[in-house]
Image 1 (cartoon, rainbow, N blue to C red):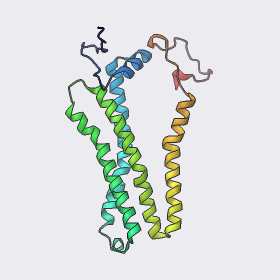
Image 2: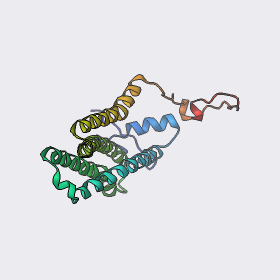
Image 3: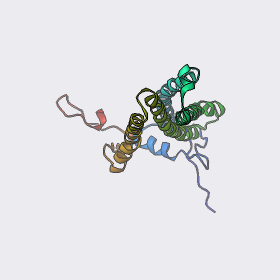
Image 4: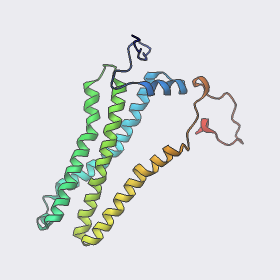
Length: 208
């Protein structure tokens, strides 16, 4: 029986397990002239930056929804508005927990050379958190507009909010990914093109 060998890092330790393989990191390292550890470090840094952007908005929304329950106007909400509020609060709370989860995961696997698993798990948790943000934001818009300008205007505003989120967060990137536009071809053997770029030359993929 042939045993499949897992790619190894410079220290000789395996980089992949059965569930969270580092195959993508190995391919990226070969095409960019980096080590696998450098690719994983860069992936983690990018994910952390994206998590900061998403979590800032979640914090503001969660604080607003929590404080809303202690206002006088909250007692005047009817059954529909109260259901919308509960939906917004729960989606925001779940998004908060999911977006914080990569931090806990990182602490528990720290110094165990499981960074490939961290990258995969953090990526999936970030996608789940963003998915929860859409009903959270949409429900919040529906609630506020319903109280401020009426139910029908609120439905229109919430529908527009959901449509913009689905278009810009999912439809647009998926369409571009499927079309293949903007793909930078890998450099041979992971090295940059040796041609000198003169000031009058148009910028190529190497200079972007």
